[in-house]
Image (tube, rainbow over all chains, first blue to last red; front, top):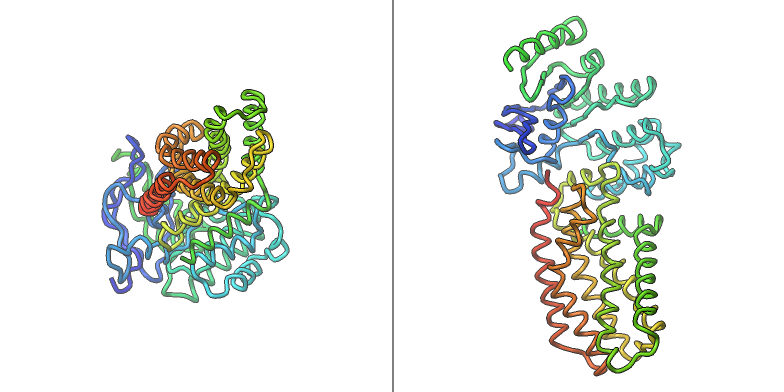
Length: 240
Length: 221
C-alpha cells in the first residue's frame, strides 16, 4: 500500500431494500485524477460519501495507507477533503468563522490565516465577514470548496463542484484544482461531474456508474468521454 | 479535549447571535408557570408545598424539550452535521461539546423559570440558593446528556418532535425523581437530601459515559 491512499474492497451500500451501490473495489493512489460519471441516481454521491468515511459500507471495507483497523475511520476522515451537495456551513457564522472553526477541528496551526488565504484564492475576500445565511448559492459553493481544501487533503472528493458557479468562478476553481493536481503529485482528485469536457480537463481516468453498477472508461478520447459514456451506458443497461 | 471546547464555543456563539433556542425555551417555560399559577392558586398552603416542586420541574422539563428539539436543528441546516462527522477527532468529544452547550442553556433557563416560579408562588429560594443551584446544575447535565444523544438520533427522522419526548421522557425518570426529591427536601425541610443528590449524580454519570461511547454511531449513516 505504498502509493495507495484509499483501498476500498467490495464496498456496497443499501438503504433499506434499495441498493444504491453494488459491490465494487476501487484503489485511489497518489497522483490519481478520477472522474466519476453517470446518470442521476447512479450511486456517484453514495460512492463519494463512502470514500470520505461519512457513510459506512453495507458490505466490504476501506483501508488507508499505513493505518491499523482501529484508527482507520478517523484517519480516513483526516486525509480526505470532501465537498457534497450542501455547503456544510453554519448560516449564523461568517465564511471566515466557518473555515476557522473547521480548521480548529482539523488541528491546523493558524486557521484564520489559512482561511483568509483560501478565500483570497477563490476571490471571496469581500464576503469573508458576512453571515453565510445572507450569501448567494454560488458564493456559498465557493466557500464550501475553500473549506474542503483547508487542511490540504491527500484525497480531494468533489461532488459536482461546478454546480451553481458562474463562468468566471468556474474558471477560477478549475485553475485552482488543476494547479493543485500538478503541483502536488502525492495527492489524488476524485470528481463527480455531469460536464464531460470539464471533467476531462481535470482528470485522466473515469469511472462510469449506472444504477449501482460500474465500468472503467479509461482516458478521454477527443477531449471528453461522450462516446465512451454512451457505449458504457448501453452495455450496462443491457446487462441489467 | 480541544474538540470539546471548539464545539462548545461554536454552539454558544451561534446561540448568542440567534438566541433562537434560549428565547423559545424561556417564553414557553414562563407560559407554563403562568398556567400553573392560575390552576393552583396564589396562596401556598403546607399541603400545596409538597407538589410545588413537581410542578416546577414539569415547567423546566417541558421548556427543555423545546431546546433539545432544536439542539441538532442548527447542524441540519446546510448539512453542517456532515462537516462535524468528517472531522478527524473522537466523536465522543463532539458529543461532550454539544451536550455542554445544551446543559448551559438548560441551566440558565431553569434558573430563570425558578425565579418566575418563586415570585408567582411566593416561595423563598434565597436561603437555599446554593444547594438549589447545585440541584439545577445536576438535573440540567442529566437532561442535556441524554437529550443531546436522542436529539442526534432522531434529527434525521421525519417525526423528531414526536419521537424525542417519547424516547427521552421514560429514561429521564431517575433525573426527575432526583431533582424533585432534592427540591422538596430543600423547600420543606430546608436541608439537602443526600439520597436525591446521589441519584442525580449516579444517573448523570451513567448517561454521560453511555452517551460518550455510543455517539460515534449516531453520526454515522
